Amino acid sequence: MKIEDCKVGMKVKYLKSDSAFFDEGEVLTIKSVDYNDNLVIFEESGSVFTSHKNIEPANKFNVGDKVFYTTYRDNYKAEVLLVGNDDYGTDYVIKILSDWHDKKNIITVTKKEIKPLKSKSNLEVGDTFRALDSTFEVESVGYDEVLKETCYFASSNYSKKQYYLVFESQIEEIIYK
Image (cartoon, rainbow, N blue to C red; front, side):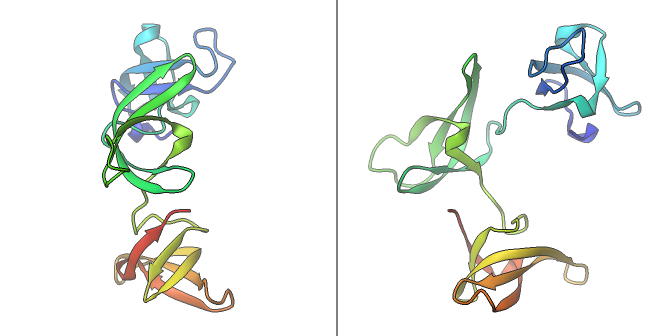
């Protein structure tokens, strides 16, 4: 985890098993961050500190994050309303942002059921999108310094042998699998 990403009050998971103070996988709360020496101090340990490299965020998603909820047949955009941790793992209360079977649109899910909502500027190799009246799969990602825009070297789903350079501003829709 980068030191810049460490914030006071943040819940993090300890990664190493060689500490006399923390167990591997233990969830800790950041008490203070020393950005000059790249050290983190936890509420649970008093004055014991560790390197920022020994921790990762405890929750995959945080309150307010936009996510993609997938059922066995449908996909929905949603927002995380609440994060709960217990002995069995992490649960998320999400609000479906579109019509959902004419029922209540606030449900509880596990992290396996939701994915981060992607933006046009942060697609990865293998992602699929619609642009220029066609469907494409990302083969490589680049950045155009002149236009200050992410660009994608992508193959057309109609023919894997045809490749196109597509800019993020040309993308009409991101397709979630």
